[in-house]
Amino acid sequence: MASFIRKVPTASGAQAVQIVHKNGRQIVDIDHIGSAHNDAELAALMEIAHQRLHPGQLALDLDVGPPPAAEPEPAPHTGSGSGSGPRAVGTRSELLWDTLADAYTRLGFDAVRDATFAKLVLARIVEPTSKADTLRVLGELGVPAPSLRTVFRCLSRCQEHDYRQRITDACPAHARSTTGLALIMYDCTTLYFEAEKEDGLRKVGMSKERRVDPQILVGLLVDATGFPLAVHCFEGNKAETKTLLPVVTDLIQGLPEAEDVVVVADAGMLSAANLNALEKAGGRFIVGSRITKARYDLAEHFQARGTYFEDGQILESERVMGTGRNARTRRVVYQYLFERHQRDQRAINAQITRAEKVADGTRPVKKDRFVRLDGADKGVDWDLVQRARDLAGLKGYVTSIDPEVMGGQAVIDAYHDLYQVERSFRMAKSDLAARPVFHHVRESVEAHLTIVFTALAVSRHLQTTSGVSIRKIVQTLRPLRSAIIEISGHRLTAAPDIPESAREILDRLKGSG
Image (cartoon, rainbow, N blue to C red; front, side, top):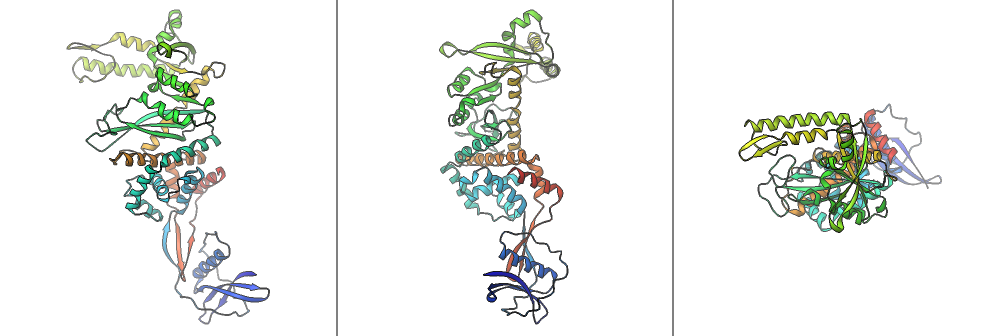
């Protein structure tokens, strides 16, 4: 049986659009789409008819010329239709939403099988706000929004069914297929709460921003491109060095390539117990070294050449870390850079200025460097200043990797990729507004963190594949709204005109898929 579209003139002078089904030369059925009274109506009805015959075509061009002449052969007429003209019954940011949803699916996050969770994640990328206000964001995007009660039930399901573990299971698989898992980087940050009282999770602790609000610690593990692999939540007063092992060992113990993984972390994670535990779990490491140890590690150099170093010079040493049976001899790599030397000296000068103000009483006593307190007397510790100046320009790295496997420069280069964790944290805190956190129940806090973590993964994936920031992607695609047209009781979607800037982004994302 064959089917085709035809236009038939009606007695009123309109154009009836029909789909005719024929078996050989015999007409067996006719679907009447509607009657058009002008060019726009005709174009809309023809598009509806084409969609009926060829599902999936969503483009509509309303800029039409004169309608084609009616076919000379008369045809049965099954109705005149409503006669109402086309009208726009809604719009939606279909291009943006489909782009985000496609990335969510491509990463394997649809394994969660929760449409409300997916909407909360993707809406957060578009406009981070409270869970209640997310319903407004979805409405503005033209996406059916769940009820607020459904959102709260979703937060409960997120914890009951451990959505984060499903997301975490999918992330390494994606990283393995792209950049690989040779390097994974860890760092820790704080998220504060708009709350006055502490509880079992939200505690006042050490804050780099010197805040006194209750907070939690968040440990984030990413690959070499900054794509997140795992996230964990800890009490706000927990020591940062205690957060490394639960996150890293939980991930690498489930990886078949665990012995080839190199964990990179900053000096805040440096402890003999951490390094021994990483080795026991099967991983290797590169960790920042506290620069105060350099005078002992490089004693021979200081004795022979004093504080003279060549720009870019790399020196290696060994250091015993741990005590008793836990003692291990560790390889330490140092590098001197003149540019870093100048930066360190400027920082030292600024710290001396603050210490002098403490000494003369014009600045209150804080945890300022180089301040010497002797009872009620305050002054500048010039011996400490000199030791700091002697080490200016040096940076150290402790590693378990043999020099034959990874040279000194390669160790340094790998450590410098640690900035990718900082970029991911900045994105989570700014673009995704992970803080402040307004939830007060631990389960809701954990669910919020899971949503932010998932949104971060989608955002980093889109940025890496498009070469454009997630903010630019949203700003470019969000205004391109598809129109929902209704005519004669039928609905179709009219695609927006796509400018070149948006076309480039979409082409890159399509090419990466």
